[in-house]
Length: 330
Length: 268
Ligand code: HEM
Image 1 (tube, rainbow over the protein chains, first blue to last red):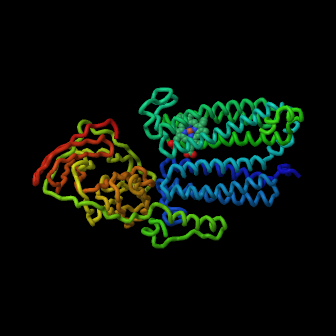
Image 2: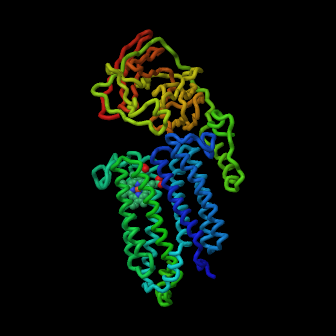
Image 3: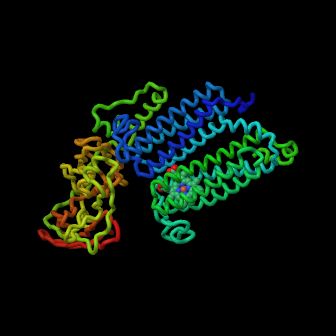
């Protein structure tokens, strides 16, 4: 039995992995609320909270301690997921992804603790934000690989009549789009954790111009903020290109729907970035911007995973392998 | 070693059950990290150099705001029933606190030029209290090495987050009335204090290398005493308004009067 050719996972496994991925997404939103409400240091100690397991949930403690409680629950769920994956004999790759997700969420807990104890240093807070999205990607991929859709995809993809060149192009674009989205997430984290969210007060222009000038560059946070808002266009272009490339493969099940979702998410994300600026960083806007940023990243990851799967199920024709060795390698 | 919060504030520290392997691995690591956190007090260092002199000159005056007072931030304290009980409905923050006759409270006046020598810090502490979900006083000045006592009179939980840049920043838990910490700062700077549980709470602790400073009272009046004869530049600092400076020359025993007027700004 080759890796990944497992039988369709049972209903409890499917339910468990999906619940874990959704819980990680909810944890991401809880984390977003901590920063957006400025509650990151409302509890000064860690791992306990004011020396207790349960401090009074007033003011910023509601967000900060609430985030810790949700995180402890989700970390336990990610740990239990390993047992489910091992016990129910899912394939080796999925099991390893489960181990990786658990390792990443433990590292995430330590980073979270460090942010509290070292008073939110931007580098650690940004790493915490970045690793959160890796945990999300790992658990979403596990949920995908244990879904009914994955089994249907495994059956249908080899039979789908798609041109090899189109598939490799889509695959490459999906990887670029997902990679760029992740870089953009890290840039966003730097903007957020260095307090540069309103360093440029207008949008789409910057200080009324296309590019800031002179002394504006010397203002704290302008460079990071400008890089984030400008790189957004590169992300948007790559996502649109990748999503359109996916549409050309609509003989493979699911890809058309994913493409539509991906296009919708990128438009929504740019709109939420703009709204974060226009509303002077309204809590709902910045939190939604972080959450939709996560979904946009997951759309890219899932597209890349599905295309890689399609490639292993229906490898390149022999002629193409001879003619285009570098493409086959990519 | 433990973080300060636990060592000062909680005598009966509870520990997390380390039975599950996850916590068994995580908890010791967490406490190891906690031991390295920046919340431990810094050991005061004795300043070196020739001793500074005290004199008999005084500069006194009044700080006012010219024009209409700006709009201060308005908040509701509904997220904490205790604070909400103290300040029901909407509360205006005392960012720009102007008295009925234009006197401006909470302005720091400090000599920025003209002082030489090293001044020893007084041993007696100054107190920063948390009362009615606000810091009291909002602006406080101390000398480098002088103890700052941080207390809470409130029957709710606070954290005291000193966002120092030149000195070591810290974040302390004040879980109940009667909690008390003493800290010193070794380098001059104005340290913003905030409570992240109640984000409207702000204080500013000015740390100065000499004793020539004052903070204006509710009527805007100030007095800087014990200056030796000389020429000084005095800065008037306000948390929201642009700084003002003036220069004056004082003879021994002289009391000079100098008023300061801040121009208003549209909103605080
Ligand atoms: C389309 C691609 C974009 C992605 C994937 C993205 C992603 C993100 C993420 C994930 C964060 C939060 C980081 C964290 O703390 O974890 C963030 C922050 C931010 N982004 Fe974006 N962003 C995009 C476009 C934009 C645009 C077009 C703007 C418009 C100016 C913008 C403005 C901001 C601002 C102001 C913040 C900081 C919010 C705060 O301080 O709370 N973003 N971005």
